[in-house]
Image 1 (tube, helix red, strand yellow):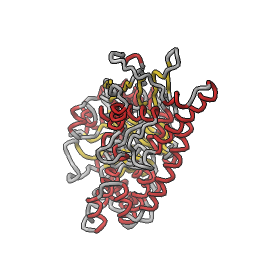
Image 2: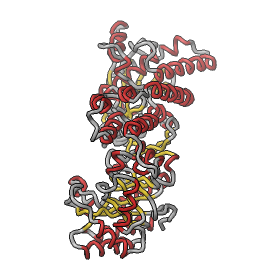
Image 3: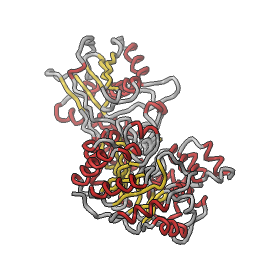
Image 4: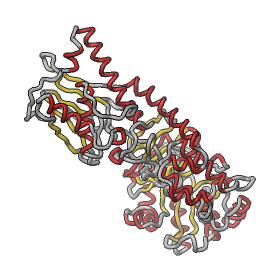
Length: 548
C-alpha cells in the first residue's frame, strides 16, 4: 500500500516541465522556498531502459540510458521532496518503472494532462482523461504496489459532471493528492484558467487538490495567495513563473533576474549539467530581457566554458573540473581491471582493457589504428584484423582486433564502429609498447591503464621469472585469419556513462557531458562526437563495470 510520508496540503510546488524541471532548477526552487519539486515527465519505457548509477564524483544518483543520456538525476538535497512524474499508458509497465526509482524519490505522479501530440498518440497524458477504466487500473496498481505516495495531474474535461466523475474515481483509487490544471487539453496559456472549476473540484473530494495553471496571474509571491483563494485550494503548483524566475517562491519577493541566472548557472555547473540544457533554461529565464549583453552572449554560447565566462564563473568551473579529475583518477587507479588469457604454453591469447579513443587527444591525421598499422608494416607482420559486432537494441559496437595470434579489445561498447576499432588498437599499442601518437599530457586514464599493465608485467616477471621483453612481446606473430570472435564473450553491461543533465540526458560534455541529456534532458555528448572521456561519469561507469 502506498505510504503517506509526503504531505500535499499547504504546499508550494514546482511543476513538471520538459527540459526545465531538471536537477538545477529543482534545487534552486527548493532553496528559494518551494516545498515539493516535480521532475520533468519521464516515459515508462525510457526509465526502464536505464541503468541506476551512484555517482560518487558528483554526489548524485543517476539513471543512464543506453545512449549515455542521463534520463534522471537526483541528490541528497532534494531527498524527501522530489516527485517523479511518469508518462505511461499501461498499469503493469508503470508499476515496473515506478519500482525502479521508488527508493530514490518521494512520490510518483502520473501525467494525465499533457496535451502534446507525442503523448496523446502514445495513449498517455491527456489521452487518459477519456479512459477512466485505464486510469483506475494504473492508479490502483501503483497505490497497491508502491511504498511511496501516488498522485496524478489532470486537465479539465469539457463537461463539469464528467470532470467531477473522473476526480471522484481517481480519489477512490487511494491516491494521496490530485493536481488540476484549469484548462481543457485543447487550450493553451493564452486561454483563461478556470479557477472556479478547480474550486468546485476541491469542494467535492476529500484529498488535497493542487491548483495549477495560474502563472498568468501569479507574478508575485503575494499573488499566489489570491490564486489559492480563488481555487479553494491550499497548495499551488507553479510552472511558467518558476521557469522564468524560481525566486517566485520567496516570501520576501523575487530577486533580480541576472543574479538568479548566475546562481542557476553556478548550480548547473556544480552538477555538471550539459551546456545545451543550461543554455535552454537561462534563455527561458531571460525571455523578456534578451537585449541585455548576457542574453546575446548566451545565444552564442557553445560550451560550459563559454557560459561560465559570461557569468564570471570560469575559475569556479575550472576548480570544479580539477576536483572532479582528482576524484576520478583516485577511483580509476583503484579499480583498473585488465583481463588476459594465455595459451597452455604461456603465449598471450587475449587482452581486454578499459581504454577509450578520443579524437581530441590526437593530432590531426594521427590515430591509434594508423600507428598500429604502420608498426605492423615495418615489422613485416600481417596487418591488424578488426572483427566488429553490433549489439542488438542500442546499435553500439564492440571490436576485437587480432594481431598475430593475440586478440585485443576494449571494455567499452561504442556508438561508432570506427571508435570501437580505435579502442582495440589502443589496447594493442599498450601491450606492444607502441607510441599510438597521442598528444603529450592527454588521456590520463589511458596512461593510468598503461602504468597498470606495466605493473602487471613486472609482477609476473617477479613471480614467474619471465623477462619484461617476453611480456611485452607476448604475441605470436602468426596470424589466425579464421578465428571465431564469439570465442570471447562480450560483456553486455559494460559501457561508459557520461554525466550531465537533460536529454536528454539529460550529460555530459567535456568532463561531464550528456545528460543529449537532451542532449539532455539530463544528458551529454557522445564519444563519437569527440566528447571528453575524462569525466566523472566516465570514470564512475568504469569503476562499476566488471571487465571481461
